[in-house]
Image (cartoon, rainbow, N blue to C red; front, side):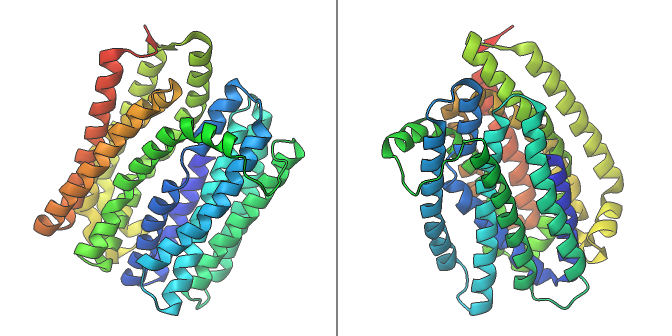
Length: 398
């Protein structure tokens, strides 16, 4: 499902880049980058918490889910307030900002609900999520096909994304109420919420700092160079991230399996991790070769010739793929053995390093500085997490 999700959005953003000007596309990307950072800061690891909890202990589940949803609703207003403060104040931009940020927030909330389904064993739950996902994405694709030929504003076009997010949330919410996971009452149980946050915040902050070093370069490029420069970097970065769509396919079920295994035996099998790491490295190497040979043709065929100057950025960025793949694996392993605090510390260090290096290199060598910073950040996080797993062998059995 994650594979299909990323593929759909990759195609849609190609249409956006072709339909709107370089400056408009850069502004859209900037809002999405800022919104993802802001929304993830308030996600707080709820999704991973519920996936792991359901895999091992389902007591008080509906009360905990209810408390999290009320908390999420309250956080929405804080998020919108902060977004409106950050971006320009004219009405058109304000409407676009609120639309995109609301969409990101809803999809983030949907992901928490999806993670609840993922905690259950059996293909029927996966099928249930997939069908609801498929319905909402069919609506999105149909709407895009209808609106693309029309002379619509960016804000009206992005409203379609918000409608899709609302539809998916409604379908997931209804399904969870049907199986008594959500018995929604507008009340927040402080005791349950404190318990959840104790376990979820380290995982949530780890994901937050991953998003920071994944997205902060966009914000810095917009402020240090220009909105147009955001477009060129974002094009290269979006193609660079295409191979990573295989990661959730492997690591989402792995997280549930490792969590179960660790809960039962207080250890996990190292051989399983080795086989997956070799598979990830092989695919990363193959992706690098393809990008180096066909980078310019890929850019022209997808986003168009006006973005051809993104080629050099893309070829260099591809060198970060092995580090990107493996630090997703090490992070998943740390979370599954309840060492999410170290995953948090390592990603926090990576995010801080990303910001500092970007501030230096963007002002000296331009967009190539953002590329080099991405490579260094991915490698740094991988090294920190690998050193911890290999040195201490926490929860790992040969």
